[in-house]
Length: 300
Image 1: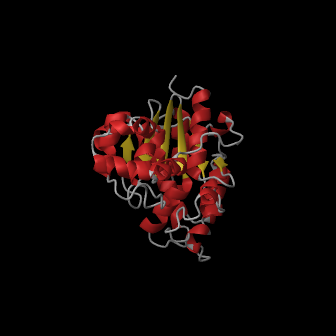
Image 2 (image 1 turned 90 degrees about the vertical axis):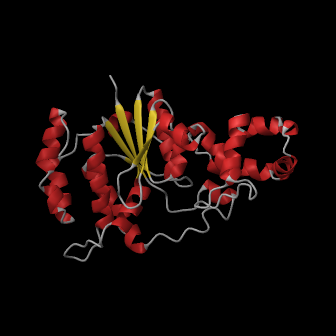
Image 3 (image 1 turned 120 degrees about the horizontal axis):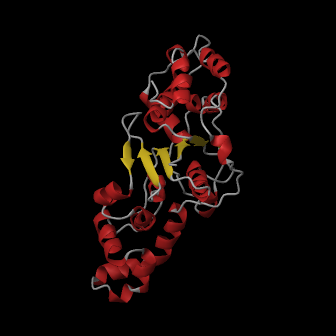
């Protein structure tokens, strides 16, 4: 049977919801727009995918192993808005009411947790994994079992990437994405890459050599003298960038797939949470949600 696991890059979803929706507040003046937007995305995905299991991953609010390797990592990113940060504990509370386990680990990013959970799930015979994120780093996880829903600006329709359409769009395979970013860098994360190598050149190199290891093994065969000089000069930076880009799939976490099984939540508890945050439109849908889960029909 085709069992599906949905993995949420929670910080990414919350960030987009926070900036996409107006500043919704409760009567107590608590800001809840990110939580509400998060739930809209979640219920839409549940309706469309009908996952058997769901897991949520969060960034830990502390420096990661990448910051220790490279002090300038993500240095250009603005700090997390306090109005968004205050909603993170609340969305965890909502997840608990839905019996959806969430994961976070000091020293690592949500992407690393997603990578680790994906690997563990495959080892437990999960045949379909759907990752929801606005971060392009998770695209490196695409394989025959894994698709990535890349959220657009705000909470618009996501782009759904599988192996085939990723290759068609980018002209490289998902597994080559790490080497691509090692060559061109990633401004959003402040990954250095090589200043004089553009995207088109990087794609051509990977199409020709497959990966950067093979590229450097055969560097003397490169006929473009200027390009060979640049690559030789920047070799250390290229492999350093690759180490920063590659997601860690071996984080020591306890992962029990059975605890991720979706649909075992307490309806009354969920009602209380929705009342607490004044999600009255969602409150009306709870009977539909629980009924459709039990009947394995489309939600909403």
